[in-house]
Image 1: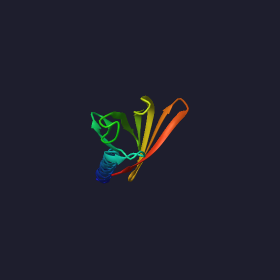
Image 2: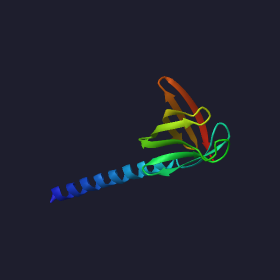
Image 3: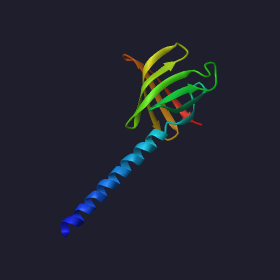
Image 4: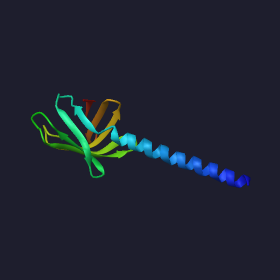
Length: 119
């Protein structure tokens, strides 16, 4: 009789753990979505595109250009980002903390970093 109660408690703990993980991962992925103000004052939109997130400029000289594609990897996002001014593509790393986004693009040891704010 005691074994059945222990098993039910065990499965309940496992179930609650899975729910927590899925809710946390879902919230994490959604925090990157939306409109962002770039350092240069342009508006960029980050939206889902398949299993990734696409970054498209909505205003400015390079309006309409796709400047990145990243995948969620834990609390960060990794993929590629493109600087439309020099038309170079970089290995991209993005982290989001509340209404602040930090994007870093690197080629070998040379990196560029921008900080964006949520609109």
